[in-house]
Length: 91
Image: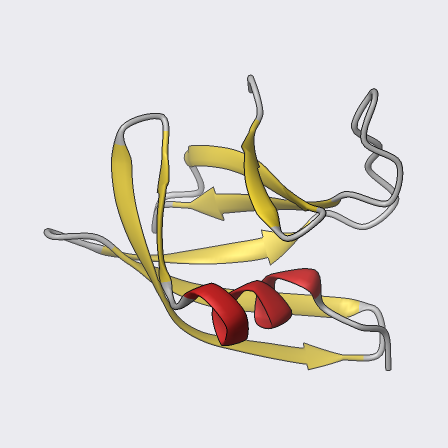
């Protein structure tokens, strides 16, 4: 099982983070082998997030990319976990 950087970040800094002005709370993360999904809650809604394997972030080698999706499949936001911090991504 691979290490999940987001899980380590939540353990050290807590479950709350902000991406593009929107506050999220990590409710839970589940993983099996190289697949990881998470539940992310905002003030008004609950979303599902998926870890985007094999996605690279320029200038951030080894960053872990996550995409948060609404129930209809629309992407709410995308971010990376790199060196113990959240990095906003344009998507």
